[in-house]
Image (tube, rainbow, N blue to C red; front, side, top):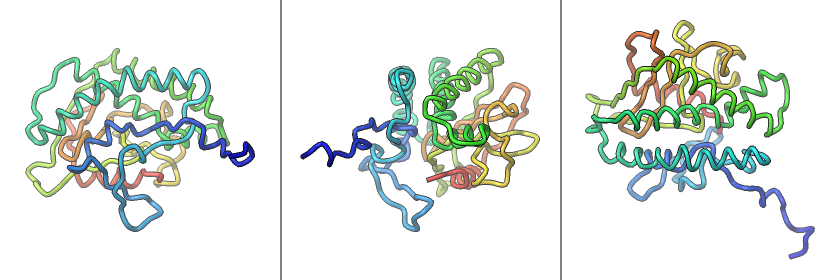
Length: 246
């Protein structure tokens, strides 16, 4: 093959913003996930490797460090816990302090590493941004979230669809629901909702973060000042679908 026929775009690294170990919590017995793309009518059955990725999402030397951090410090530990959550399903009842730390780190990273978050940053910037800028802002906001949780430890609530045995949690390409208690708004790009363009990180202080961990288990992290909240499978699923961008 001559050099002029090489598509150099295909040579850029394929990097997931929706980790494969997370997707496996929603896989069927064959290890595949059902995916409903926003521009297609019929769901497709896919391998997690082919879902939730982008070419050269983490750019330059900083990007390489980011990818290594996500893999070694976040996803490896989460994968072990995710397998237990999936196997125990509705019987998932116990969790250690160390496992809560693993979940906190994972949900913080999954909040800021998506294409929807990149779109939020573009909206705030008022125009295009390069991937290096996205990476820098992502790291800064990740640190802001984790520092806030260390300073004021939040409360963790685990929910199941029970007693509605036929209901299941779903997930999406922007899987973390960020809730603002007073406005009752979800953090998402403006084209996907009726919220204004100030629903991205650090413009207001969110009160809750919700992440479906499997079809049977959902995690809600509440700030210390928030009272006890309820989580509905149907409401979660509608919000996840509404804020998907692909």
